Image (cartoon, rainbow, N blue to C red; front, side, top):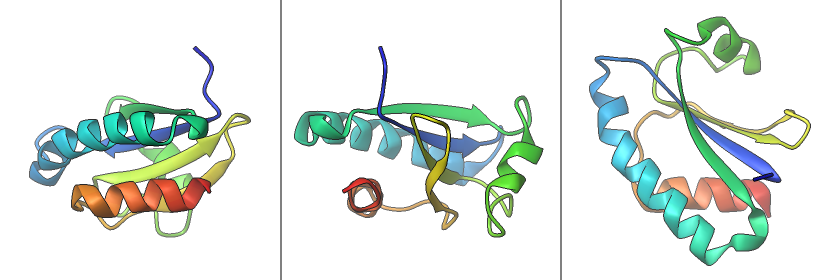
Length: 102
């Protein structure tokens, strides 16, 4: 399946905030898919220790300061939005994603 946008949750093992964020991430992914199908967002997770901490650090001046962090990319893999605030409630995450893409 092809997506217009990809939302990525950057995590690392042993991170309590990351573990707390995962069910929120799944809930919001489902809600956004159901309520805003026109946004066509693919949702994924990246373990910065297994994959690339350097990649995360290269995104913005604020990125790479800790996990969880969230980035949204377009079809060409350009960074559209970044949030390094860490754990957030579902409503705040949903607002971040929707407002970033509308």
